[in-house]
Each structure stands twice: as structure tokens, then as C-alpha cells.
Amino acid sequence: MASNFNPYPNPSPIPPTPHHPKPQTHFSQSPQTLSADPNPDPKLVITGGAKLSGHVSISGSKNSALPILAATLCCTGTSKLKNVPNLSDTRTMTSVLGSLGAEIEFSDNEVVVKTDGVGSVEPDPTRIGKFRGGFFVVGPLLARFGEAVVGLPGGCDIGARPVDIYVSGLRALGAVVEVRDNKVVAKTANGKRLAGGRFRLDYPSVGATETLMMAACLAEGKTLLSNVAREPEIIDLARFLTKTGAHMEGVGTDKICIYVKSRLLGAEYGIMPDRIETGSFMLAAAITRSRISLSPVFPGWLSSLIDKLVGAGCKITHKHNMLEVSSSTEDLRGFDVGTLPYPGFPTDLQPQTMAFLSTCNDLSIVDESVFENRMTHVKELQKLGAKIQVFGSTALIYGKEKGNKLCGTRVLASDLRGGMSIVLAGLAAEGVTEVNGVSHIDRGYENLENKLRLLGADVKRFEFSKSNLQQ
Ligand code: EPU
Image 1 (cartoon, rainbow, N blue to C red):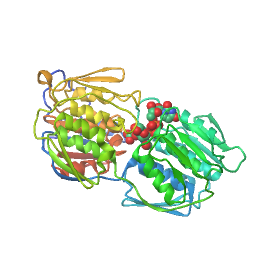
Image 2: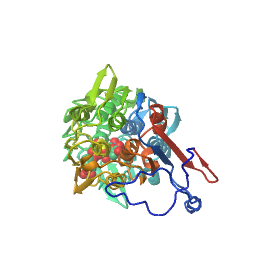
Image 3: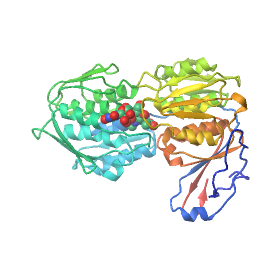
Image 4: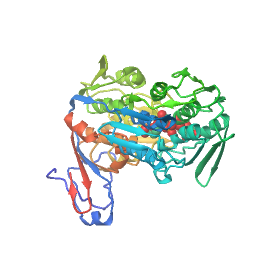
């Protein structure tokens, strides 16, 4: 444990961090805080300023693993998924499958799912309410069992996250769907199989595309989905489904045609690397003006970020599935960026990019168009000294203008990617940053502090247990 850090936070208000904040060098303690909160969140304590170097191994993709775990419900027999990141979200997803009667073994990064014992079409709503991915099971359950009763999903607090596109799409495939008592209750019209059909999504929603692909795989007729999402995770799901015997065309374009299959059989499949984790570590190198390599990476998935970082003055090279990011100068240029569905700039990298832009020269503008409320990290970045103004879904980031700089203080992660943005800011800040609310970050980054430490960052995790505190 760091000698100058006391893990019991003082409940007094966070010191104001106006224009030129004083870097925090330690935090004083009040042990009573621990007993006041029976289940305190872990925290990360980061001493900023270290240069990063070395290599980071990228984990399997959370947003690919979640729908693929759901897709195992489309299959009879056993599926073996490899490279599954061990995260709270993937563990919750396996518990959702378990609540339906599936047999699950999750060890290291391998998940074996046996679905022959599935006897329920209503997953535990308390688990579904924890995250967005749990809702994906509505498609497979309806397709295979003709019925699904699934609670409305939870997830990061980044704006309204309706399920209207899912519902209209399932209706287009012949299901009778009602939303009542916070649940979606869906049945096939004839009590047997979905019918297949044509459906144009109003917006290329990732989750709705995935759910409808899974539902359509076992429908009686051919299905044509248009204006679908084109994210790499959609392609990964299609690859898994194809291995189980499904037949589809057009995946990766804005139209997918899914052909009739009466049965899918569990398969072995390796989950793709996490492109958002990759982008986050690229930004960690950029914000600390360091040089690191990352693998396995498919640079084409991140070309929107790579173009921006190169424009800012970073050097990025790649060989096979390895990427190297370096920025040898302090003086990087800011840029303007707007989030869009793939292949546009990913909303899941917007908060981390904003942290980076607050260390660049010039004024930068960030426009968030995918989620209506993905700006909660701004308040925390401001506490760290970033000069940012928000107008609706647009943020102006003033960068290093007039000597603005990041200085460590106590901050709170209130969602996954926003949490990562303050971790990145903490790496670059002067002094000590204490990041609270780390359970949000744990939903999406496997072994985060170990990976950062291997790169040379000074990051410590503090876990609270009932009787004591362990690092
Ligand atoms: N939308 C609707 N109606 C719907 C579905 C979506 O209006 O029926 C709207 C949403 O409200 C949102 C927009 O469409 O404004 C995009 O939502 P989308 O459905 O594409 O997102 P998602 O499937 O809920 C997945 C990822 C998110 C990622 C988005 C966009 C998973 C489990 N989640 O969410 O990941 O931001 O796609 O790329 O795959 C994260 O990992 O931090 C995360 C939030």
C-alpha cells in the first residue's frame, strides 16, 4: 500500500478544483466511512505522470461475448466459447443463462454452456436489470421455445435506452409482443416458430440487430433485415451462428438476409479481441505521451480513432495483428470528432478521447450523437482540472490553453467508459487521483490495473471486505 495514501476516504466535500488546481498528493482518512457503507466499491489510486512502455495483451470483446453467450440458447447441445473476458458483465450473463436452466462452466477465459436443460423462458429479472446485454436472450428464447418473458434491461446511465426497435422487429417476424410490468412478454403467433419476414430498423441499433439475427436464425421463412448495424461484433456473432449451422448473407453491410434452419447445434468459438479496450489503451499511450504496443488488434476496426490520433501528432504503426502507438512530443494537436455507428467514431471511446483532448493544444469539439446523455464524465474531468464546456450533446474542450493542466483529486466513475476516461486522466495528471465507483469500470475492462501496472503505471486497487481492507 502506498505510504502516503490512506484508504479510508474523508467524507468531506471534494476540494474545489478551479482553473489551476493544486495536485493532490495524498488523501486523509476517516475509518468511520467504511462502517457507514456495508458494500463499498473498490477504488483505484493512481499516481500520475509515469511514462508507459511495453506491451499490452488485449482481452476478448465484452460486447461480442454477451450476444454470443445469448446465442448459445439458439442451439441444442454444448457450446464452448474461448477468449471470453472475465468481467462482471460476462459473469452476470452466464448467471442469466443459468437462471434459465443452462449448465455453465466458466473457468479462465473459457465458458462451456449446455443448453439442453433449459426449462424456463423467464430469466431472473434482477440479473437482467443489471446490464443491457441480458435483454439479448429475448431473441433466442422466442426462436427456440416460442416464448420469452424478459425484464427491461439495465446498463450504464448514458441516456434513455428503449427497446422499441427490438419489439417492432420481433413483431415483423410474427411474434406477439407486449410490454407490461417492466417486462417484454413475447410469443410466437402460432405457438410454434417465428415466421421470418422483412424489417427495416429505424436506427442501426447494435443490440436490436443482434437480437433479430438470433431470432431469425430459427424462423420458418427467410428474413431480410435492413439498416442494420455493421459493428465488428455483429460479424463475430454471425460467425458463431454460422458455426452452429445458421445461414446468413450480407453481414457487415447494412442488409442481412437470414435463411431457414430448423435446428442449430452448439459449437466451439473464439471471441474477437476487444476493440474498445484496444482504443482505450491507445489513448492511454497518447495521453501519457508514451510508446506501447498492443495485440491482438485489427487496425481496420479502429481506423476512425487511428486517423484522429495520427492527425493529433501520434505515430501509429502496425504489423500483422500488432499495433504500436507512440507520441514523443508534449505538443499534440486537438481535433473535432463526432460519434456515429460503425464505421464512424465509436461512442464507447468518446469519454476516453475527451480526457486525451484535455491534454492537447487548441480547442477541440466532441459531439455525441449515439447516446443522449453520455457526458457525465465531464464533471469528473473538470474536477481533475480539464476545462470543458457542455452544450447539450456537444462539448468544447479547451486543452492546454492558458496553462490548463490535469491535477489529481478524488473522482467518481458513474459509468463504464466515463470511468475509464478518468482513469486515463489520472495517468496523465500531476499527483494522486483516487477513482471511486470502480465496479462500473470492472464491467468492461479485464485486469485493468494489472495491465496498466505492467506498462509501468502507478495504479493500486483497494478492495473493501467486511472486516478489513486488502490491496
Ligand atoms: N435505440 C433505440 N431503440 C432501440 C434500441 C436502441 O432508440 O430499440 C437507441 C439507443 O437509445 C441509443 C442508440 O439507439 O441512443 C444506440 O443504441 P444501440 O442499440 O446501438 O446500443 P446497444 O446495443 O444498447 C451496444 C453496446 C454499447 C455501445 C452501443 C453502440 C453492448 C452490450 N452494448 O449497446 O456498449 O455503446 O452498442 O455502439 O453491446 C459499452 O460497452 O460501454 C456500451 C455502452
